[in-house]
Amino acid sequence: MYSLIRHGRNSLELQKWLHLRFAVNLLQNESAFSPNPSPNALSSLSNSFSSPSAAASDVSSLRDGRKGNNFTVSYLVHSLGFTTKLAESIWTKVSSEGKANPDSVLNLLRSHGFTDSQISTIITNYPRLLILDSEKSLAPNLKFLQSRGASTSELTEIVSNVPRILGMRWHKAVGRYYDFVKDIIEADKCSNYEMSCLSLPEGTSQENIIRNVLALRRLGVPQRLLFSLLTSNFHVVSGKERFEESLKKVVGMGFDPATSKFVKALCVIYQMSDKTTEEKVSLYRKLGFSTGDVWEIFKKNPLFLALSEKNILNSFDTFISLGFSRDEFVTMVKHCPQCIGLSAESVKKKTEFLVKEMNWSLKAVVSNPSVFGYSLEKRTVPRCNVIKALMSKGLLGSELPPLSPVLAVTDEAFLNKYVRKHDDKELVAELMSIFVPHRSS
Image (cartoon, rainbow, N blue to C red; front, side, top):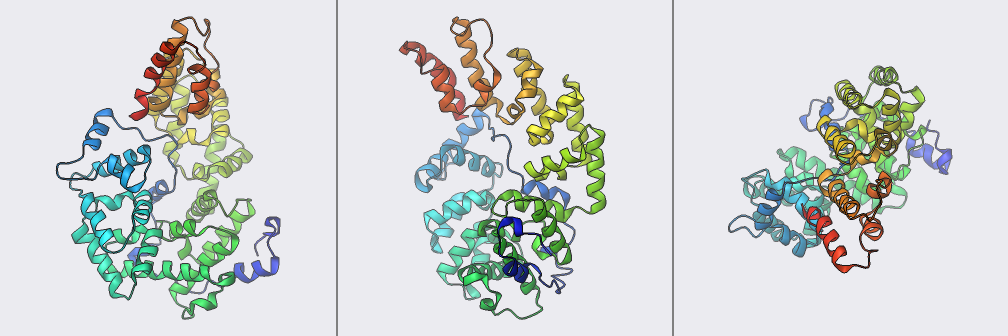
């Protein structure tokens, strides 16, 4: 059924795993696996295109921490090994909830045998855990799992892999997810991921989910991505014929099962009906894209096809209002699909800064659409300020350098090209003072 020879897989083995019978009606009428997930759930899969940006005052307050609370950016960095950027990002998410008491969450996890390394993984993958009530939400779930016979090692391993388990409200859902993840881990330890090693009752809903998950594992989908599928709002692995057909389409498009794009594509295809897909392709064609363009862009960024009609049209109108032509809009999206998902405010600010303040042409922006994904405060402005300073001193001539070597290169490459190469130590220090302050915000 599945055309997977191109992936170099053994056809007989694949037929064994991919010609599965999807005979179990999975978890019907149960809220934890709603058959109609919200379209807004797509946002949970998208990776941030531009880096998070926090106001300097917010970061300052985060670093200071709350009175009597040792949980600070510095604490995350020195005790749990986070980078400063990651720690500040997590702190920003946590700080929106004034009632949060992160210290109590960390203490609770440690009291149940979680190591700092496991806690670091948990917080990185599920920052929201830090704003949950340790006594009313987390402790009861941990106690419930222990009551089911979970050993300390089993508990810490499974929660580390799928920390969302602790954020669930109902014990029935907590127990079900725990069993699924435990079975997946056990199956992964068996040779060839054989179902027989699980001893699952035939025809149960649990067997259906495990069969789907193991089919994906057999294709080469990493365990970490399987867990994200299991606990996502899409409920892809809960499907039957729909799962089978969606998987067939995604594999046929040539997505690499070992990548997150494969999982994103599977979620998008699973959620969209053929009619909705045709309507979305038709809309893009009206904006100037060919059908081939749409599917090529989808391969680069699967969430491109999941955008709502309103978001697509608003994005198009924003670029046109800024002076870009229809063809230029199509060109930018083809080279950098994430452009079409950015807010109008972000696109306007970045375009106006680059064109009006820095005097780069619209054509230069069209040739480098990735600039829309860079943080204005953390990347674009500090680098451009260095360029302005050099030009004011007559060290770059009268013309702006090309946009790409200024913004598209790494920090190290930029500093080597425009800052460190100068022999004047005072000049280098001055340029670094222009560049560095923005990096901590």
